[in-house]
Length: 620
Image (cartoon, rainbow, N blue to C red):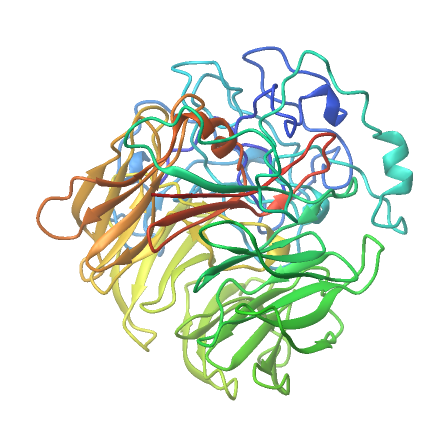
């Protein structure tokens, strides 16, 4: 489906990588970050350390980025040459038959709708990350080509990349060091700030109101441009960095996790809504959604060491910051690891997903309900969960055996009983779940160099349709193997009739394509109103709400696209040019548009000699 660039961008902690600005204090090439400046037109070089392999493996395992070269003049579905179908027969574009290119070491690989895909099971390190050449390619520094912000193709992160900070410098942390990285920090101590580099405006910290006597971000705002409601800086973090998962808008409060804090702001003024919650250790996971009454769950580390488990849970009320129950969740079984956990909510049930297991707890009181564990005497292990209207579990079966395959199940969230099981043909691996209801799954096949997007019938394992298109797509997804997150892609929206995906363009405006759930074929498309990428966020009142990313000299915008009639994007918010540089600096991000306000926040905080960005809000 995707025609990949010559090489993917480097994998961070499962987060998309953007081109960096050498003048930005968060830029890994800035000498203030401990890295040497890169000459114009050259890609930033990854710093060796924990998470960057030094030698290629003899045989890569599931879930790692391969780097197939782009082949000009290719024909066939998704811009790829025609290949035999999944069972050896030659077929037309569609069912399990989107051809792809071979990866390094001679093994076949599957470029998908957003680059290399995560595969679950035992892992091997990837090859050393490399960068494509030429303007417009991921990893190319700004200034080449037309100067626009380069688009992202998400790649799979290394299994050992849990300590890499998306969009930042790698700081080596040796097992046994504390979170400050005492041994590492001695080797990666920041040099004095460069006098020639200029920092972006810093109108406040995450603890204040964002306007503590600093520069007015609305100064010079043009007619028709949205107003900057407020801007927050991130808390300082140690050399190993910190996570900032989740962003929740609830009534007149927006809540953001940041390193060891949960921060709450008034949506209009940015004033502190309730006292920040301080956690004893690093936040390592959080639910993407809240319960109907506004409760979320945050997970934090059990200790300070780099291998500390992500197993301490705390329920928090978004409205007032009141804490609910809190408890640790133990691992279940010999190969059940909790270095990184993933939390999903379905009704009154919280599923705590880990490496090869999951524990279901009741949201109301924290009572353990069941363990989603191995199946068939250990031949199948859970590899990920996704929640919302339904609870979906992916299973990796028969790893390292000739019968290796993946399965998908819908579980009764209260009991864990499987309502249906979808077994995919041998060699087909589950990459991402684009939607839970209806269930839409992305699959890939290394051996056949093919990939597939399958739509299932409601509450059934039966196939409704399979996507057939010549486009390549590039939603931004967290594909970190350790995150165990099957969902959570920015740039994917679904209603009862269509799947909406952004096309991938090397330069210029892209399209949002509406794909019929009934037939898998394109129904209509809309072109971005700017020379930048347009990413669908959600569908509301018969309109697709999309975010158009900024460039370094033009602000982004929020648009609506009618799902019937004319599909020309209509601007809802035009972000000011004056803050385009700040907005462009959110490399790993969450976005949302609620009640006429747009919010953008980081999902990962790097150690910086300056002040890192946390959150920015626009309104009318």
